[in-house]
Length: 185
Image 1: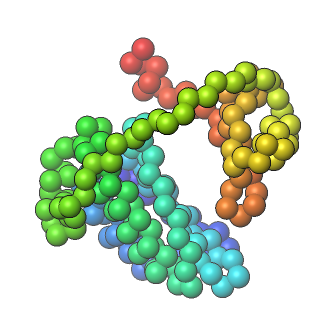
Image 2: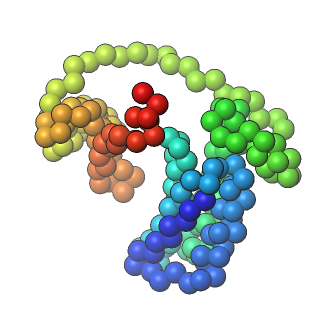
């Protein structure tokens, strides 16, 4: 796994980076060698936020935690990621290295009573997707009182999604063409 460790408004010491390698290293046997872990530490008002995003193939795993100490926030993030992996173990086994899950979950971290959750679509909704600017899409999202809004970006012609972030700002999701996906076509 490749690691990118970034500090925003904070200088990261080598012992924290070593802790990141050690903590996230236990997930390496599950992911491929091409997996990439992005770790971002942000300092705001004496609180440290650690955000970890792991990308492997077409799958992405993300967790974020805020604490007074960055080590505590990192521990929380690792626990969250482990919980996501345990919860979706059966589905992930099909996509990732199968034999690694047995090794990971037999190492004492397993919860034997976890049952596989079924995903059930309870409503299907269709609507026209009109070309809008990003600002118009945010305005439309706010008018209907939703947390996200799908639209066709007037400048690119692509389907995009705007969403409201926890901090009150907005995010934009844009599709990215993966070369590996094109090879499969």
